[in-house]
Structure formats: C-alpha cells, structure tokens
Amino acid sequence: MAQIILIEPDRVLAATYRQGLEASGHRVVMCASAQAAIYAADEIWPDVIITELQLIGHSGIEFLYEFRSYSEWQTIPVLIHSHVPPAEFSDAWELLRNELGISHYLYKPLTSFKQLLRVVNDCLVPASAPVQP
Image 1 (cartoon, one colour):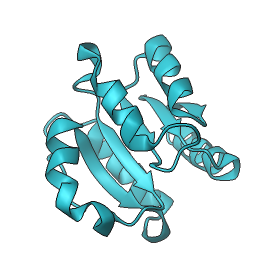
Image 2 (cartoon, rainbow, N blue to C red):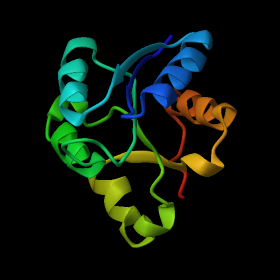
Image 3 (cartoon, rainbow, N blue to C red):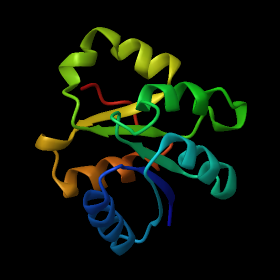
C-alpha cells in the first residue's frame, strides 16, 4: 500500500481518482492546493505525488520548486496529471525531469484511470525509468 498525495482542484475528479486508487490498495490524501499538499507531505511522508499543474493560488510548477527544496523529499516520485498539453513543456522536459524530478507527465484528456494506476504502480518500483511525454 502506497501513501499518495493527490493534488487536484476539481473535487469530482479528485473523488473519482481517490476511489479508484483506494480500491487498488493505496491510501490517498486529497489536496486542492499546493500549500495543503506541502502540509500533507510533512504529515504523511508520501510514496508518490500526483499533481495537476493548474492549481488555485500557486501553479503546479511553483509547488514542485517548493516541494523539491526540501532535501528529504528529493527522491519522492512526482507525476503530473494535467489538462495542460505536454507539448507546452516539450522544450522544458529536461528541466522538469532533472531539476524538478518529474517521473511522468500524463495528459488528462488522453489518459484512462487504468493508465494512471499503471504509472502510479510503476513509480513505486525503484528500477522504473522516467517516461517522456
């Protein structure tokens, strides 16, 4: 069982993802904002972070910079699951992967829950290699 922080401002999507992830044996803490996710990470020490980039108050990128600024969170896998098309970050993929430690980038309109779950489970395997968008 993995501890997952899900940063998703859409309550309906968050509840749906939480239900599916929990049915698959994971524990999920839902957060609607970047700041709530930082507090949650400090409390539960997550195994995986799933984040939307379009957040209220702070962007997902701002969250990632703050999250990665803590040395104890450097190795926690982070996957982006966003409505922002990956093409918008094609020039910045190296930055996202190397500096911010993004494991995967999933485009919501083209990602099924089954695919999301597979990627989450892949993140839990230490030998998994990052997947490019």
